[in-house]
Length: 170
Image (cartoon, rainbow, N blue to C red; front, side, top):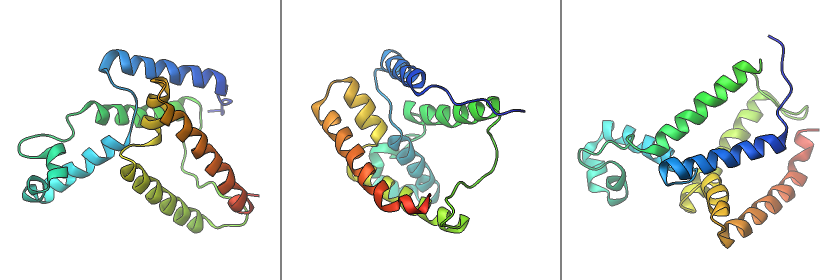
């Protein structure tokens, strides 16, 4: 199958806005992913030690007692993102195993940097009590000033960071 070109970022942006509108309309909530990750982790913890989950106030909120932590709209939303991304890749002829990296690093280094970055991002999402999709997309759509300021700060930090790590990619 031949690769198809990427979608226009403007059309994709409008599509994302329509998905956010549909999420508000059908669920009464915006978009977000970190809550689904938390619920998945609590589900695993329940299998290992139900008592630990029940005795921890934070974990019990998600899956204490007979509560199924996976019975939540966020979990289904995240599954939809994963399945939708895979289907999109298959349809566009881009679904394959590959490791993208610059000429200055090896695939093993790329994996290491990805794991470190993912762990820092996950820690930051829990520390901030939400991920960027919930914070920027949902907060911005609700015209929350903090979401707009946060988005500008995140983009500024990303541009500054890119300056220092660019040599890994060029």
